[in-house]
Image (cartoon, rainbow, N blue to C red; front, top):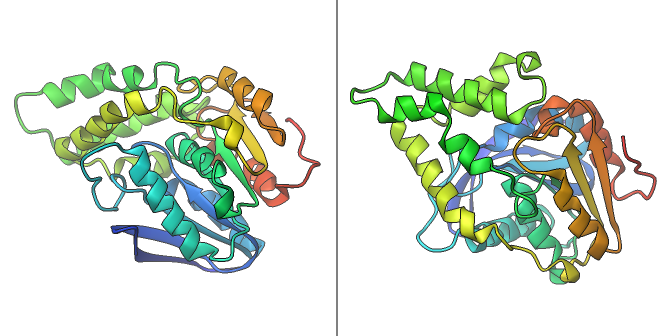
Length: 284
């Protein structure tokens, strides 16, 4: 079993935190979603490590323990960061990029770049196809609104508990079955009102950019879309646009699963990653 190394990197001018596995096979770059961090991949990394698979998960700029985003459009900054990550991970090409939500959007945009010579991408409920009411659901959540509007300082422990509760309700089909440590880890990066406010500000900046972020006719590698059937944040209907346009595009829908299959269906999701880009992948 390969040990997981946590360390700091600077990529495209952004300092970030990396969770990295040595190993064999097509290298895997793992990208998280909005307001999340590389920690969302820890369960998958544990399983990949048992199979000696090369992989790295990173905090993207603006999230987790990475540098803040610069002014200007967000997606081009994430594109540059992800390209630099690929150059670090697989300088000769041949990597697979998997991303959840916002990370899935970045993965799809990388797939439009034939010069990167990707083996394939695995967008997991990617943002930018059919966005449902993701930001409205978060920003208008009554618990968060009450705490953010409170006239007096709110203890960090109270904020973290509130963030963890909102995360459980929105991201998972079975909120009470999720290990409390998963929600606590997510909330650990949002321990005060300023950090929550920064993530909400990034979300507002992204709204316009996510309306039409893809040029699907340029996708130059195999695409395996993965969706939880009970996803509340990004509608599965958006997958049809990819399947109708990308010649080597496939869809796997995981039952009894919400927006984060890497956490709620980690075993099945890791199997999909190990098999991809095998043509034998079938819907669940």
